[in-house]
Amino acid sequence: MAVYNPKSLKAEEFIHDGEILATIEYAEANKNNIELIDEILEKARPKKDGNGLVCKGLTHREASVLLACDIPEKVEEIYKIAEEIKLAFYGNRIVMFAPLYLSNYCVNGCLYCPYHFKNKHITRKKLTQEEVKAEVIALQDMGHKRLAIEAGEDPVNNPIEYILECIKTIYSINHKNGAIRRVNVNIAATTVENYRKLKDAGIGTYILFQETYHKESYLKLHPTGPKHDYDYHTEAMDRAMEGGIDDVGLGVLFGLETYKYEFAGLIMHAEHLEAVHGVGPHTISVPRLKRADDIDPDEFDNSLADDKFEKIIACIRLAVPYTGMIISTRENEKVRERVLRLGISQISGGSRTSVGGYTEEERPHDSEQFDVSDQRSLDEVVKWLMDNGHIPSFCTACYREGRTGDRFMSFCKSGQILNFCHPNALMTLTEYLVDYASEETKRVGFALIEKELEKIPRERTKEIAKEHIEDIKNSNSRDFRF
Image 1: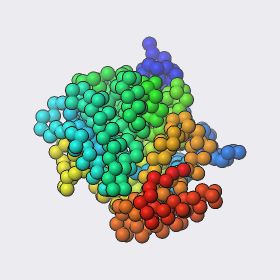
Image 2 (image 1 turned 30 degrees about the horizontal axis):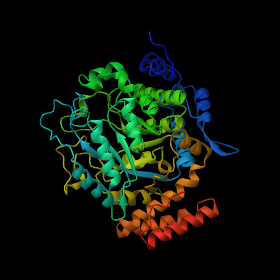
Image 3 (image 1 turned 90 degrees about the vertical axis):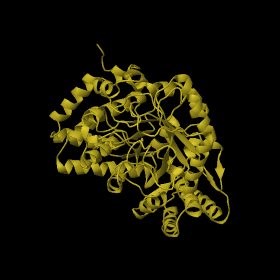
Image 4 (image 1 turned 135 degrees about the horizontal axis):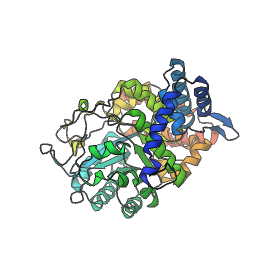
């Protein structure tokens, strides 16, 4: 019988059903234990040491107690500490990205995804390299610098060679002042050898959503296809790291199983990566099940209300303080605005979830993976962020300067990341404003940059940033970075 062991490489031992159930029971028994809750909150709070602010994070049991707690003043304290942590390590910067769907051919039978192989009326598409180029140019013309490429699992139509060819094409395209500087990859679990190939291709983060950590539910939701193998899927991040990819992104699809189970499993997975590889996930995504072509979320009985969703995000931020958090256009403007302060550090803008969608004048719906709730343009999202006091960042410098994996985390934990990220965000925002923004967005943006420059603590860094910003405004010089 499996025994819980975060250092194990076996899925059923580091994501241990008995430990999760015991954690949920423990959290329920202690959800009104004020003394324990205060102790956990104190542990989570950022504290000063000789190098600046530090955070200890929380175990999956401690974080689950906070998630279960429904004492209003304590919940408010959770939110307040989440905001403190977010500002301490990520400031008011929000990294921008867009998904790029390469192919919706898929051999899996996932019951929550319209790409499942039994869906005979969805339009199946696979981009040629010329079509990839056209999509990338369309994204560059919007102002994007960072993409997350997506493809269904199909060894015939979407082999690793096709993905690698697409990555090479994406990186090769320089259009006007546009260039994609970071390609993150969200494709099916694969082999160590294939992860090495992705690493050699220069990818940023490898992203793979677990969908659900509950094994029995997982097997029912994935009745056919290679994704049916729970262990192979759940152990994918270990193979990715063995293949040299040190930035990996976790996520579950909230709504498939009870949120308390998924939350505990997600934090346990992060703990496992830290215990085995010395570095936790680079990002955690928090998608919720949404309506799609032949998918009705009402058929699933674990839907998640907005207030619970916000609390989950805040508790993740307390548990894994240094990990980036991503929210997509699955969520509407109102929800996205509320959760930005609670821990989200990356959002998509102007997204289309259909294959070939960016070159279409009207948003196509015949090959979408899910309904997009926030349908604003990138320019509208950028201005909205700035109006709310955030700095939209198109920065990819850490990846390109080798600040990945444990090196990124060490910079982040020491607070040094602020000396890079703030000026880099302002310089890349300047690029966006000069090259792509509407006049009103420019007006708001340049005023914000002028104010934010004064917050750079090092005078020399501030002066260099100002010089680079002037160069960007007055010439075609681009891609300055610290």
